[in-house]
Image 1 (cartoon, rainbow, N blue to C red):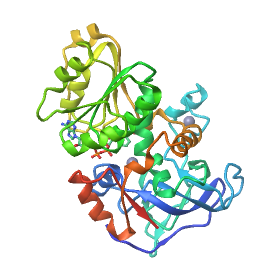
Image 2 (cartoon, helix red, strand yellow):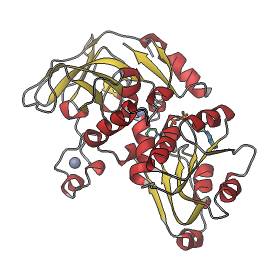
Image 3 (tube, rainbow, N blue to C red):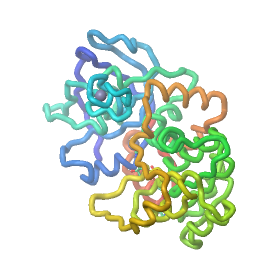
Length: 345
Ligand SMILES: NC(=O)c1ccc[n+]([C@@H]2O[C@H](COP(=O)([O-])OP(=O)(O)OC[C@H]3O[C@@H](n4cnc5c(N)ncnc54)[C@H](O)[C@@H]3O)[C@@H](O)[C@H]2O)c1
Ligand SMILES: [Zn+2]
Ligand SMILES: [Zn+2]
């Protein structure tokens, strides 16, 4: 990664120019850098951001200059077949800015997840900017723009965790810990955190884990059963993205339990399961993109929970860094030293 001067166009119809205050470093930014998403280099990375609206284009009514916003990578079009069926979280034509940001020489930049917020200013579709309570500090608030929302929604929306449920979360990074926090807020009676890193298990308790399992030492399927009267968990969230952890999640469920896959696998990964078990165990095998969230509905809810002290967003902010330190942050992420490094602009 390099820090470059870029040209950000004035907002056109339906667009908003946003002055970024803080932006988290997410695993997906690293995937982009490694060419694992696509080959549309050069990328403008950064997509977990909070800031203020600087200017808006023609026809924009949802935000105005001065508004404090979190940026979303889902802004439903309202017209595709999913939107029309009342399921806008599956929108097939989510909005982004129409104009491109460029390098000084005119080379077009690909904005990560249609945002691109490791920058002082960024151009987005106005509907990607969601107004939130200005009392939430930007370092914490920006994080709900991706990983926290994905994990929280995986448990609360996709998994439908409710009062009295038993829940297991495999993989306790930022995403898994947000699933744990959501399960705790929803009233789960038991929340079992599973990871291979003892530090991560320690941190998971802070977000509401009632029990922890180090799956590099203990068979997690057996351990989850033991902790749930021999039955397995009602909802298991897989937040790693690997065949072995998916398999653990599949077998760690109670009869008719729900598996929610939020971890993103790589294209070469395969899974082999006995079909009779898939049938016989019943329940639901679901995947969750962005926590099946509707940003304009869900972001203000998460921020209110944060301001009430029920959702510990500050706990996800491991460090704040300068814009020239993102490579170092990738390094720390891979070593498991942080939940989130946050670039402050
Ligand atoms: N579905 C979505 O919309 C969405 C959105 C954001 C991120 N993600 C994905 O969610 C996953 C987690 O993201 P993150 O930011 O929390 O990443 P992270 O790297 O911070 O956390 C991953 C965690 O998994 C643990 N882990 C690794 N191997 C394990 C194993 N075999 N068993 C148990 N735990 C293991 C690690 O120790 C770490 O704590 C990634 O795959 C990411 O791409 C999905
Ligand atoms: Zn749509
Ligand atoms: Zn992300």
